[in-house]
Length: 226
Image (cartoon, rainbow, N blue to C red; front, side, top):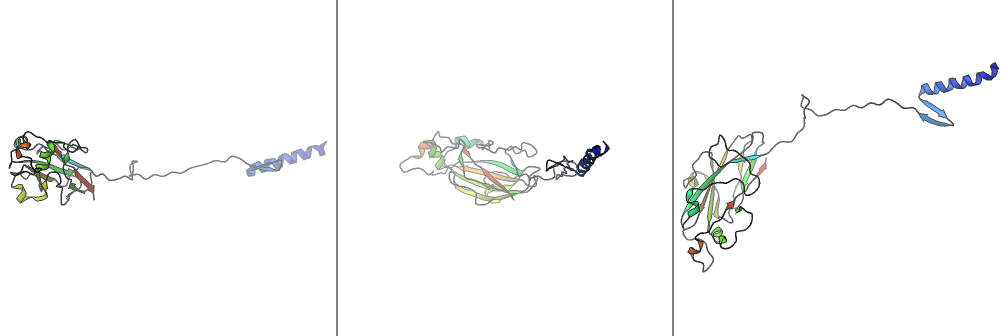
């Protein structure tokens, strides 16, 4: 009896040894036992647990109120914010001129960049139809880049830098202007719209055909970060 019981005990000893070694052989096939696992992670932080990698911000804002301690806003789709011309703008006669201004700057958290004025389009993004197209094609525009707070009138175009001049329908800026980061600079633009004494008109169309017409031009300032 004692000789018959020794073999099972010996097999149990070998199985225990294999289990302790991390593998069990059953029927000639080896099996690996489950193991502990562990993971280590890291993240790029800012030293206080917040995000440590981020993009810069480039954002331009405008002011048409003249009160530069308030009134700053953003208008990124047409037609934008209303820039009110001097009162005679809605009653022009040949030879009359009207003025309006806007000031641009970057926002407080923005990086620097450049801004460039584009040619006028209709505020409804459609070409003016007849007879309004007669007035659209007859008007002239000049735009001057000036120091913030400078007057916007006829004298502006000798003191400031004229960046656009010619027919309203085609004139755009000849140069861009720089806006410093974090509201570090303010760029003022003075717009002058004139109905010439002798307006451009199709052959055979009298100047009287311009009476009672109205258009609503809109301008885009296209800006790009440095």
